[in-house]
Length: 58
Image (cartoon, rainbow, N blue to C red; front, top):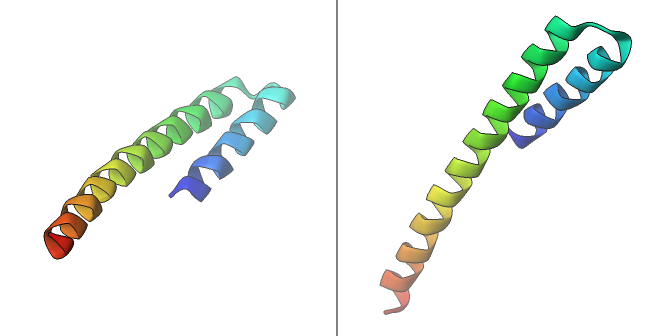
């Protein structure tokens, strides 16, 4: 998912450099959404992993 966010970010940057503002804006919006979703899922699974480790050890 983070890879796709970076792909859309690069597409947005290339489109912005070439002057395609509509495509650039859409690509940046998709990249921000995917990066935010990645961050939220990362934090959720990190918390789940920490609590599961504490239950196994303790």
